[in-house]
Length: 348
Image (cartoon, rainbow, N blue to C red):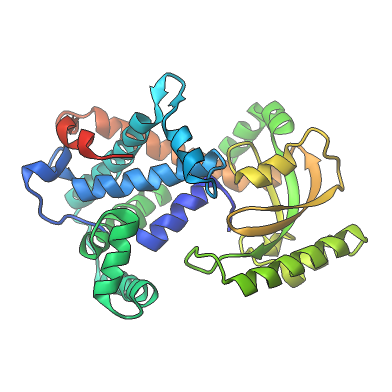
């Protein structure tokens, strides 16, 4: 598990991605891209997704309604945030629709195993949100995302086809040479030395697998455990052994809890500790994020090629995918044609 703003989006997708091409009248069409429509329910969902990500990036995930309102009444640069969130949502939807268009051209389709996974996810959602009752789960979904359970279920199929199947195959087909990865690192060495931080951490989760906060009594137990681990770490107990024994982060536990990252890659609280100008090698502290308690040991400023090479390869693959999608956007017939009157009806 990586504690980044990207992860917040991915967690939301796992919890929610289920909306697809339900039939829509003209009044429900937000935009068109070629043969694909962006429906009003899809747009509402992606607006909520982007909105949550922007709040998290700004450190407002647990802020008061008043603080959030102040944030959304403001601008990012010269653009009102309420406008920006819609722009970003449309960009994400345009990308997904272009992937769908090309997936269908290449005869991609969902197999039985894919459909079984969708059904299993919906059954789990109904159990968790509606205690086994679909009607109750539907109400919960509408309250959270302004869409019905059927709409919520439907996009999962589109998303699975576009990303889990088609885009995944495209990325695998992008050959990234080792020498290109090394060249990228060497070219950006100064940036890595200046802007990267390496830490180790123990995570004590305060939410369940669906992202919900634990009950009050469980939270107290978690807080006590986190403070006990912090005391042990400061008293000189081997940090790697604490990671192995206690950490609930599967993404770093097998790497002794280590992460190397730059600004904008991790949640705010994690970064605030790592990029504190007064922090020194070996310093130990604890922060609390939406995920839980992080007992952190600062390792160093800068990073190494070995710790960055996998991320660089992923970055180069991502760049390749972006170039491909940008090419599709420029092709005749793939223009994003907006229905501004419908867009304006969606409130932020």
